Image 1 (spheres, one colour):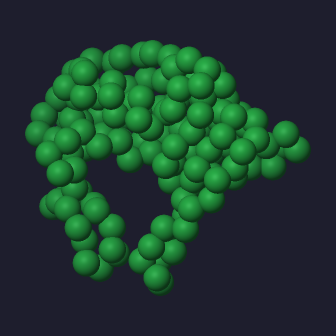
Image 2: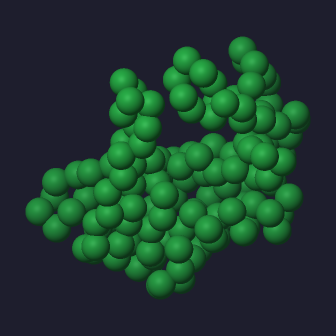
Length: 140
């Protein structure tokens, strides 16, 4: 399944120290009525909760890290789930010792954060439960 989209607009913003990334992006998407797009960002966090999808068990394993880390890459997409804008975001973080961790982003407390949302024009993808994977994936 392939859909062609055109860029409608590019929005940039920042979050302030202490704000939470995922809920703030959801709020931003709702305020701007964005239901299709791409998300990216850089910055630093003081706390994060990320997950890894265990394919055999068909469930996420999550872990919280309570330490300062740099955001090396934050990348995601925007679609519709349960009638609402839904950001699906992954993140790669660098620790003080320069080792990296990453995974599905559940939440993160900002130290500093700048982001871009590229809004796409056209019919938005909708998420639906996929029996084979146990995930909510784009409908075909």
